Image 1 (cartoon, rainbow, N blue to C red):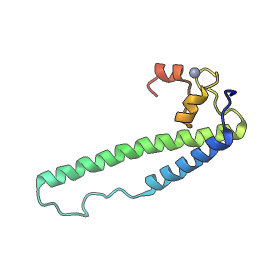
Image 2 (cartoon, rainbow, N blue to C red; image 1 turned 30 degrees about the vertical axis):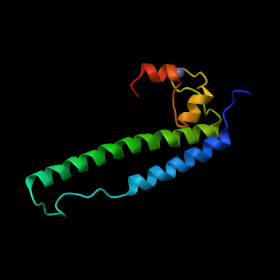
Image 3 (cartoon, rainbow, N blue to C red; image 1 turned 60 degrees about the vertical axis):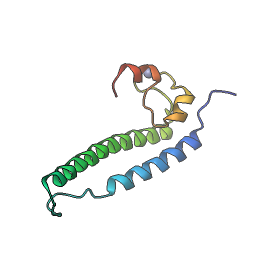
Length: 112
Ligand SMILES: [Zn+2]
């Protein structure tokens, strides 16, 4: 089998992923001041959960940006090309992570 990327399949996956992320990001995170706490510990737990939600949301925003970039690459025909070195990203990697912006070698060398 030829090592080609299934562009239509990738687009469907990316669009579904983008919709899911947008929905998740659109959900309001409960702010402080709307609840009364039974104890300091309950308040601390709530703050912790809120910060965890915000961190998760940052992660989702970053991922959504990658998904949107990948969809733009599908449009201009550069999908599957590593943005760091310009070489083709292995189809197996794109299958696992359709929004991958770099090949496995570059991903390994950069924390992002
Ligand atoms: Zn690369």
